[in-house]
Image (cartoon, rainbow, N blue to C red; front, side, top):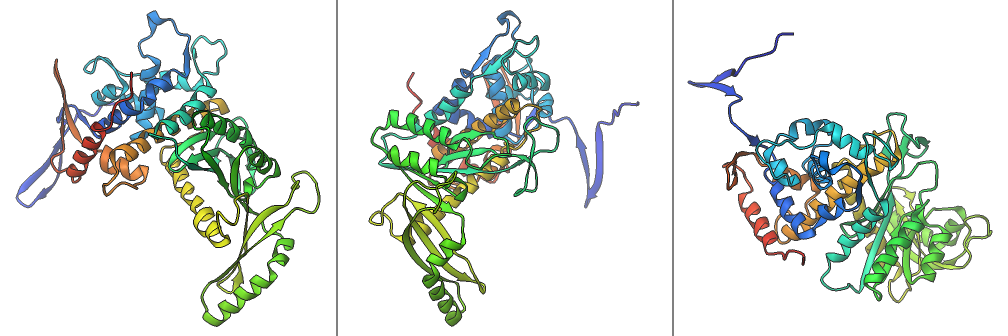
Length: 461
């Protein structure tokens, strides 16, 4: 096949001027805003500690790319929008990416290629000639909670843990592949736990089980780690009806953890709020507008079957009539009426859990659903990398963006506006100099973020 040697590309003229393009701009990067992530990582000390969660059994004599460089390269790549390992065949030549990954030789020594990074992800801890790096799941789980704890100067009085599941569709014959009727596809059913915008748990699960499967073990682990640092903190667990399980509620009641869970509707619950539903219907008939009436009552399942409740619990109900039809909703809670009245509990507290859906969407913008490896362990590793990329960008939002127009911006928006900045890279003996695009429209925002990051103290030691 004849190779293309064309070096100049001519386009339609612009009035009297020719329009000509050449690949002669020198070393140019599209990701110079990644330096903000590097400053964020210096304050979080995230990637060095993530590297400590790996066991490297390679012979040091033949090691060219350290584990810290490998995981940094992968996490920065995801944060900057490169989901595929194939992307690193080009990224490994980018001087800026070498700076981000901690490579001493910025000019000549390339980063790891796709094959090396692939071996990092596929290692399962068993003896292998080619896959000699493995990770400790417990270490990475603990690190996520440590980063959360360190984000507070002093212990808060109360925190709310949001728990939810989502779907990662599968398009191959991956391990643990099952069809899920609700999502109408073959998928995994990962579990996420957040506190505000900070991620505490990212667990990959098969989809042939209950939405709450394994959640108690994860919640117990997280609560124990939080209480070890903050013994007196009040913790409230919040989730939808998929987590309204007697085992989970009983554990919360025995361990000083409050809860608010959605409840699936049934005919018995509908009969209990019959009067309120009639009242809401009458209001809707008179005004033509959605009508809500709130009430509360004590409730216990009738039969002590598997999953039945072992005690009465407070249930708050929303009797709503909307668009000519009934729309009742129920939540069960351990919080008292003195703490939260019925309407405030539902509208102000429970409905606020919808913000977690935005946090899960941000995981998808960091390619957490790229679970195309054959084994669940490898796909869990990819999910961890995406979670760490989220911690990094979320840390930039928390430390560098307060008080700015992008203080509440989504990860994808932060990437587009702050990280994707074209720059020419020049490397000398003393400097790595980035000549960023003069026409970059958010220069003042960049300067403000940079100043706020530099004003944040570095971690001790």
